Length: 531
Image (tube, rainbow, N blue to C red):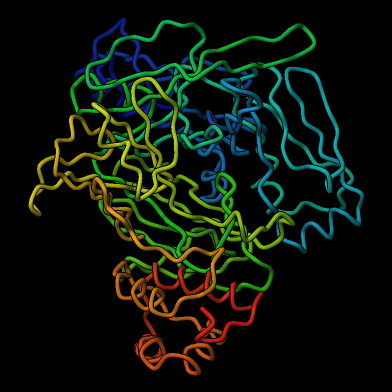
């Protein structure tokens, strides 16, 4: 075994071998396995792993292991990315109320690779604790985990030669569930597993899985039971307990809890948000229309994380001169990496593709804010909902970053990212949905909106466009129908459109709104005066 310079102690702190105590167990910063300190006389103290005969791909990434043949250390940046992310993305998916199952999703391959595998009649063989299942490559979409195997192996058969893309995306297999370490991103239908060495954000909800109902009280962290995870097999299966986890405050205990699992706790969210054109989001997949060549995404840099994409030559850094960056939509993988935290940090945030057949414009990404109280479940937030002013304590959830402010005479009285208590009379609530603009709520407020089910009213369109002040995106020549309509019916609307086209910049909220008007104008013929 090779020596390891430092280990993680019981408080989540990184400690060098010289300061470590004999007889105590420490965690390896790379592979998160147990290591022990060896005190030496006449030479430098060091950490080392215990001997392991059958090493998983995760263990073979670690600098503390040496080996030959099938167990030699894995090299190559792209291989390290997919293994650190657990091989195939693992999802906690709801199949009934408060009931979850584990599904591993097969990431999309390029069309040229799929054509080759289809012509060869390739089969996908999945091995889990000795049991094997076989699928045709064209029918392989996801796999439901059936055991508590440490690693589930995937192999493609009937291939004429090795294809690196298949090896990297599929054949590293699936890292099995680890209740002691795994954290899942939370969204409305479950969540997907966070890559090791990633950032965990204060105030954001995550999911964890426990083998029993006991959750250790941790200062600064709240837990709420969400349901049961069912792992079914021919022997009757097992049930686990699923909990929502929120770090409400940075404390020594909350830092230790997160770092012992192999993650880093940060206070500011640093995420990637799809902006334009519309895309369907399925977990980590961004699905675009065919022949949509470019996409614009938003990244407000708040930490040391950087964005990379996987290219033909390895990892390619993306230029971030502005908060909005451009990338190809066809079979590209976007990473958020924080190498100051760990050299293996490389969380896959999105896989952009055009080849899925399930693009649906009605399912494209839209900001969605929900709220609940202590007794009732989540419900969508709407601007004229006065019920929130009657509640003593409110919990907010969103599919993008939000900040909540309670205002009195334009001064901030309360601010939070998640919880608001005791809203007094004559207050306004502002929810900043970055980067999509703001929602303003106040009791008895009437917010004018264009109803997509009613005819177009030009005065209302102009009023809405004047209120659009969100982050700007590149102007796309995609609104010819709206230009023609404005030119024939409203000089003011036409002037607004021409200004944006001349600047080649348009607020994101305005683009989204004009997109809905464009779709409406395709379906019906409107004439000013018949509104």
